[in-house]
Image (cartoon, rainbow, N blue to C red):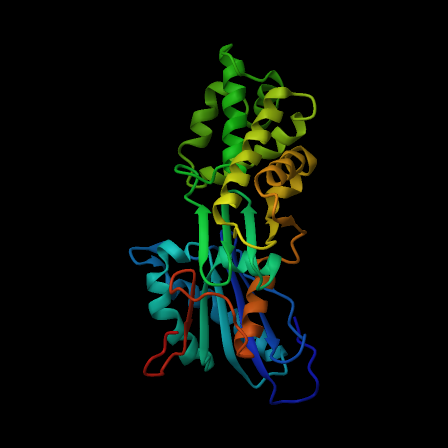
Length: 337
């Protein structure tokens, strides 16, 4: 986990963090060069409490990883930190209030950007240019910008939204399995077989889903089975077509209407391949004829690194709205940009 330095003990570094449902991923890098460490991972998600994301638990996990990376890096200080965090837009008040000061005290960080994970996903996929990104894994959110403001669509969780995401697809697939089990219209014998193979007898399925604190992940684990069945099963194929329609609707809601914006897809759900991607590309071509669909260049951690480099160089052009993106200089009289 080293940053190959240039022999200068006075190189200024940056910290980039991606905090999501599977824990923290952390890198440090050298400002003004392409050098960065490999990532360290915590494997434990940051807790949430009465004030939202728990800043104390965040630092408990982050600080040892940063010390380990800095010990191996030829940087004299960490002047800039970018923290990409899931839930920041709705659960980030405590983190915004406490984390910049903690980073300043612990590591001497002078400038901190607190960024929603959707924004780091966007920048990782497209960089700092106008467009839209659909980020899909267990959940789903779309985010877009014309570089004057951010627009987001969905990302409301598996009970209220995340339409077209992994949990949504998995739940729809299990519903089709239960319809077949009940001999109701709209059922799929193929999905019923997959469900029984994965979960056992259907009479026990509610007890294996409802009590779980990780229900979205349990539901999303069935989404690949829907993709497996789709080439030969019209019900499974219909579920993925509906998911593609939901994704395209979210992309339309956030995509700039002027110029030729770029649209990218990022997240593990798209590893399902053609059964999902073919109908999705058809929907995007129909609904966003002025946009150009491009491959994602990188992931959310890459996005945090890009933001850190731009921020350290004074070249950040992303909209800073205090919710999706906040830039703070701890200790200065007017520290928030």
